[in-house]
Image (cartoon, rainbow, N blue to C red; front, side, top):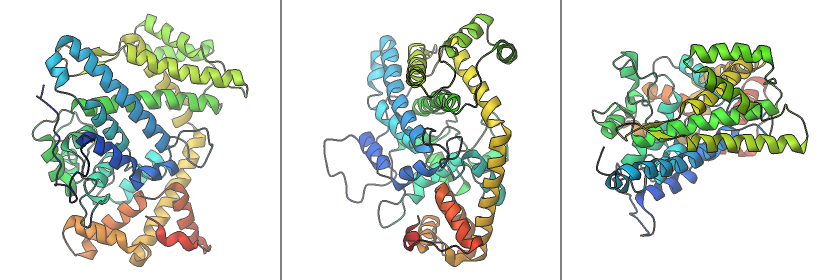
Length: 415
């Protein structure tokens, strides 16, 4: 285990540290909270459209929940580690701030329309690609400029390492250099920054592991509750339980843990518009997250952690239900097909008329790339601009470009 957390930044702050009451990691949290890229997540899909129902999670409310869970999980991890090795735990002072900051940053690059938008943008830009985690890293290292020159948010190296769930570049991913890593965390343009952060270590940092776990807990609980509320996940009757039990046991879950997982989910009644249901839904989320925290166990090295078998079964069951009845539903597939077509139309129109994109995007990408070659950079400009839009902005832009609708006087302020 490393001897401490890295407080250095990629560049000295141009204005220096104006206060002595915040740690470097606390400043990371504050910078991200005030980032416009975080605010835009209020208009971006979590699972269903952010325009659909006000009770469904957006990418912003999901991110806030992940940051809270990550902070508490970091405290829990340090407490467990401290019981074994107090010096090792003391060396991780500030870990909760790092994990909170990493969680706030981890979805900044998520494009309009969630994973459907992510896959469509990757298809539309085969030469440079698109991946949400890589776009998040690009935002904090390049696009979210704090000063006159584009240097990104200028986070500490420790927080940057906490964002890196998939420690490889797009080029390494395409070459299958690390087949055990299923995605990539940086485009070629940010490859140097990623490798500077991780060195030769292709294992995610403890902050990255905590952030990733918090992300998994948040969507396993919140997505399940959201779509029980929406009436898309049915009650657990006997035929459904038999089918789900087969899936769980084939995934290595013991029969006793399967039974306990069913018993836990049955504590929440079927959807109704009653106060009783609202209380039960909130209680289910609270009890489930509390159970996860209580079941955290360190591995033998103390450098990682996991859940007990019963809580792992609950997590898997919630994921299966959301996958089967929501992500695999024809209703969602129809919606996503339309969203992909809208994105493709907008990208095609922007490619054909460079003057439609605000000049700021040309400037930032040129500064970040260190070149003035507009032709070579324009695909980057289009990709970064479209990925930065909210879903409402995409629909409004599509209507202006293809239906001749009048725009708003404030459209020039688009990011």
